[in-house]
Length: 429
Image (cartoon, rainbow, N blue to C red):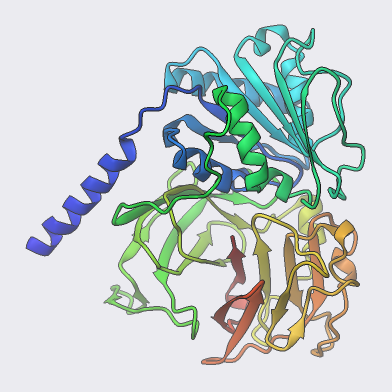
């Protein structure tokens, strides 16, 4: 009983610490780009919270970038109204990346909607003729990179504050520390006070919050359950501590997905987490994360779409007991040959023919093309997909056998699950 009371006290202290902030800044709404989701902004949100912004004033707007159509601006307006009501603010600051920049410019053309926005940051997006707003009245900062291979028509916007970068790819221009500093100074009207380092939280517990969505569509995923496990990154095994009634082992964290697809866990530091996602419809997915330094309220667990363009594109992912289906997701930047190192066991993946700079690949799908042999060649089914790379690798599903993924000097060992049991996704921050 004393142990339980002690844990509850720690959780209470952690929540209390999270609520203490002296932030007087306006709320910020972040808008992702094509095939993106709110977790594209997780690192920038953690930087803002590291610099005194209250977490409950930092919001992400999800939209269906492959089929949202003309309703996106209406949805964004409704979302911003909700933010204003929740925070008791009269205006927000707005940030748009890539295609999200087009969404924001379109939104701000409406003079009534523009009254709700104090400042706007346009990141890695199309070069516009003038600042945002019907009469170009919205103070606008434009951040772009000359090494962005996706937005090739980026450049200075006349009348805006322009920040030109070199070396950053299309994802990095949104997620990097180099982008945070000018954005922070622009919103706070300060200079030299921003610390771009994500500071580790001193709280005993980290609050991990997020939601299940359908990949690319960002429609809310109907969840039967989300189960969270500790796993050992050196051998891929779960740490079993308890028994459920059906005799399956888990670590003690189990939350059923809410109607809005959200979930929440409290975890301690240095924990490698595995999320087992069981959607009502569709395939099971196993997500693997590195430890979290701070609270993260933007954990996204994506399930495969069951229809439409994306489903057709990913329809060749195996679903059998012979092989493992693996996805390697690099959350903050693309994997680029010559700059980054990515491999599975002894098979190199960051090769020029697989991951050239102009591919801007952030997700690498590994599965067999049908002959149960590894060629290491690009899979044709994903050759035309933006941000996605497919590689012909046959990973034989073997009980008690493991595979090791190497990424830029880090490594994680995972089990070789049968693809019929679910798709495995490892996330490197």
